[in-house]
Amino acid sequence: MALDFSDDRKMSRQAMKAELLDAETELQLTRAWRDHRDEQALHRLITAYMRLAISMAGKFRRYGAPMNDLIQEAGLGLMKAADKFDPERGVRFSTYAVWWIRASIQDYVMRNWSMVRTGSTSSQKTLFFNMRRVQAKFEREAMARGEELDSHQLRALVSREVGVPLHDVEMMEGRLSGSDFSLNALQSSDDDGREWIDALEDDSQQGDARGEQAHDMAQLRDWLMVAMNGLSERERFIVRERKLREEPRTLESLGEELGLSKERIRQVEAAAFQKMRKSLESQSKEVFHFLT
Image (cartoon, rainbow, N blue to C red):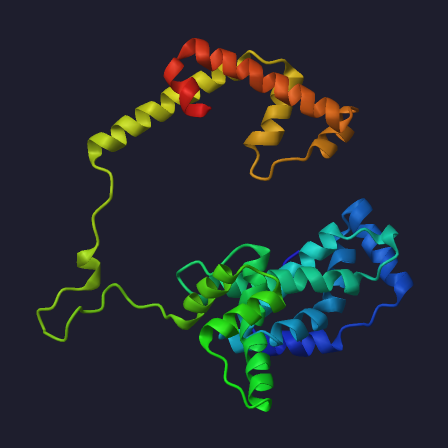
């Protein structure tokens, strides 16, 4: 199902005209999508709650991102919520969707705030979206008492309030106060001044190094294929699902599919890795020590 986010004003008008779902209708739609992958039910559900997504997107405009992009990310979060929602839990879909919409928008804002990665852990995300507000609160309280906080005291207070290490506060403060600069900017005002990019070390691989790396990777793949071929069909399946997928599967999901307990899946996985280690060690001591 495709949604058109090309015009945020048009999207907002359409969202305001969408139907309001009662609890029973919402339940029927979420079940139809979960059980039958009914795209019409999904479209109706997403359309009904786009007003919620757009409303939440508007709260992040102060971070400088285009509203159209924020709405798109909010819509993606809404669709992910629909895909993961369990209608049997007795929770309204809108309540569940709020978390996914907010997470999607926050991830987008943090990815695009700076070319330098701003943060990825939950504590860093909490700091990014709350540090300025918490700092302002403590500064107001100190001013009301006739006091003045120095930067160290302020960071310590933020650290305790948000519940993150002090060094995380210091790091985030530095990242939020900095700006991105072009590497093509001149180092001086002279016409013949060098660009900053000219001062960077060339760390690219030369042709011979790339050739050696390609050869080594091909050899490694051959050794791994031999090791995998020494496993049973079930062991190969578990190793592929646990280690070779872009999104590795859990022990629990594999256990449900194979009719085994989580502990048994873990035991089979450990045994498979032990076989692979022995196979790799017999083929090459060097690759075995590299992989371990």
